[in-house]
Picture 1: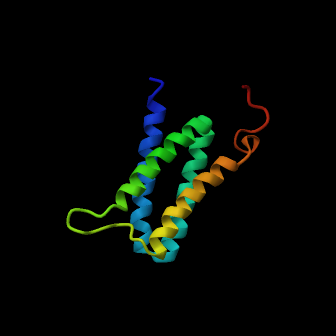
Picture 2: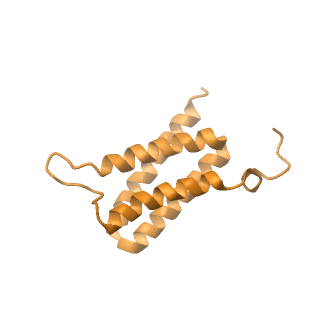
Amino acid sequence: MKAVPYIALVVIGGVVATVGTTAHRAYPWWGIAGAILMVLAAAVYARSWKRFSGLLFFALGWFAAALGWSITGPGGSVLVEADALGMTWLYGGAGAIVVAALIPRPLLEGTDVQK
């Protein structure tokens, strides 16, 4: 039962990457901004819930899905192109995960939490 939260965080990371991948093309610059904010919010949630191990599992799910969507398919189609929009989405999402990792722990948990 200890693995269930981590499996959930991997799935959440994959879902966030999938939604962000579709949003970044549907509404070009507003979609990227919203998708990156969604990654940041989910990453902060993962870190608040399970600390750095939770953030790591969320990031694994996010990177696997985001990079999976950027691979050229059998018909030659690709969802994340190697242009300004696609690279902004991939690097912006990765940057949002790094920002979540840099937030001081007392801001996430408070100062009266038992260890």
